[in-house]
Each structure stands twice: as structure tokens, then as C-alpha cells.
Image (tube, rainbow, N blue to C red):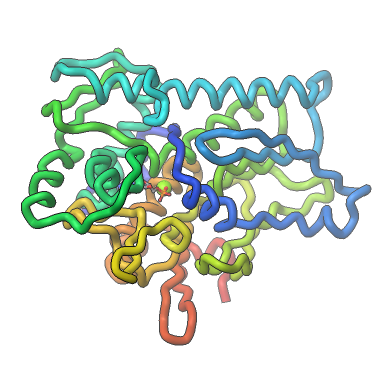
Length: 360
Ligand code: AMP
Ligand code: MG
């Protein structure tokens, strides 16, 4: 493969809401453990700012406030950033830039913000890198399987329907430019949906804001996508837990010390539909048009920024336990795959993940 993740040209993020089951899934996929503070709350207080966003909640943990900055100021700034991202990229807001682009009945350049162009550009790069496993034009298929804004009863598509749906999917039909920032579609049937990458972008936006405000130690989380910086007040690193991918339980399977990095998790275990007793995941393989198989329970990816971690976690879910693992090793990604087996779950960590966290 010729494109290298290390040459990432863009560092950004975007957003979009998810359906309630997905919200539950991401909220509980990563249970954040503040063990140091639990042991001695007085010595190591952690302040949390939370609020609604993207169909879920955000949470920001801080150990100290910069001089002259109030919590209210920080919260207002965070909310402003999130509002901006939603106005740019949410497909749940009819007047967002992206919704307007999707409705636009022309194939010329359509002006968007620099942020939207960055996120689409990063998405297209991951699409190319993954041979189309990741694809932000997958919306018609997502909607057919009733995982998008359109609700209703799910039907297994006929071959004819599948062919028609797949004609509307293909990241190569979308172009992006950064100066001036704009998007272009080659066909009016194609649309962009940034659900699989936007939460991570929003996490990066909050991190950037906190840093401009002088906050040095923080943990930002939106629906399971996480980014940390610095340490807690006692000098200990932030510890995050990766949950076992089982819908009815919330058991932490692995804890990792995440400092100065981002981690995103994609899973199929809470957001699925059942047809004739068979489960179908909300993650779709754009190459086949079908939801991905149920053997890979979850994938967690660690990266420098959360936008990339988010996109890659979804990508590995699509590629599956074997192809996904090989792809992750080939690209030197830090990834942990939780694979279902007859005896429970088998964890498969890539060498980069094992190096980072000294996985036993
Ligand atoms: P995530 O939770 O980050 O893995 O994103 C999953 C969401 O991304 C789904 O609910 C869909 O809206 C969308 N999606 C599903 N399959 C794909 C895919 N192959 N590429 C990009 N986005 C996808
Ligand atoms: Mg994702």
C-alpha cells in the first residue's frame, strides 16, 4: 500500500448524531476509570464539565483551571466549538453545511468551512487507504438498514435493490479542495455522512480549545471517543478502560494508560438490528452492501488525534478480524481487536498496541 498513515495531511474532526442504541453503545464501550481520584478525592480532585452533543454527551475532566479562567468560561467555549461543528457537519441538522451540500442539485464546487473540508479530506484519505472499506458515501446503505435518520422496518434488500443502492455509494464520486474550501459531487445521487469520523473531530476541537485556554491536564470524551493530555494532579496518567463487547454487561476487559493521545472504539454489540433472529451491525461493508459479520465485537484504535482514531476503528470493524488485523499491522496501527469465540472473547493486539501498553 502506498499511502502512509504517518503522512496524515489533515488533523480535524466532525460530527453527527447517532441513534439511541448507538449512544448507549459508545457511552458504555469505554468506561473511564479515575482510580487515583477515587482513592483520594481531596488530594486529587477532578472537575467534570458535561453537556449534550451529537445525540450523546460530552465529558471533559480537568485537574486544574488556568489562572483567571472560570469553569463557566470553559464550558461556554466548549459548547460554542461543538455547536460550530454541528452546524458544519451534522446530517441531523437540515441547515448544516453538509446537509445543504447533500441537497444541493449541482455538480460544481460547493463552498464549505475549512473544518468540513479537512474532515472530508481525511475521510477520503482513509477510504483510499482502506480500499473503500471506510466510505463516507455509505449513507444510502446505512439508511436502507435503518441505522440512519430514516426509521422503519428493516428488509433484507433484494439483489436488484442492492445494485441500485450500491450505485449511490462510492467515495471517488466526492472531491474536496482546501483553497478555497469546497466539496464537489460527481453525481446528484451521492451524499456524505461523517458519522464514523465526526465525534473524533469534535474531541480534537475541544482539546485544541482547552490548550488555547492554557489547560494542561485533561481528558475529553464524546460517546466513547477519548483524548487526553498531561496527567492528573498526582502526576499519574489517565487510565481508560476498554469494555468487553457484550450488550447486557459493562465489564472492563482492559485498562490502558493514555497520555497525550486519542483512542476510539467501534463495536457492533449494542447497535444492531435483528432480522429472523440474525443480528446485523450498524457498520456496513460498502463493498458488499451488507452489515459486517458479528464475529468482531469491537476494535479500539490509539492515534495522535481522535479524528483518525475514530475513522480507523470503523475501518477495522469493516475489514473484520483477519483482514483488519493484517491491515493494522501493515500500517503499524495501535489497535486492539476483541473477537468472539466459543469460549468468550479473544483479544488480538497489534505489535504497536502491545508496545504502547505493554500488553501481556
Ligand atoms: P462508528 O461508531 O464511528 O464506528 O461509526 C459508525 C457509523 O458510521 C454508522 O452508524 C454509520 O452511520 C456509519 N458507517 C457505517 N458503515 C460505514 C463505513 N463502512 N464507512 C464509513 N461510515 C460508516
Ligand atoms: Mg468511527
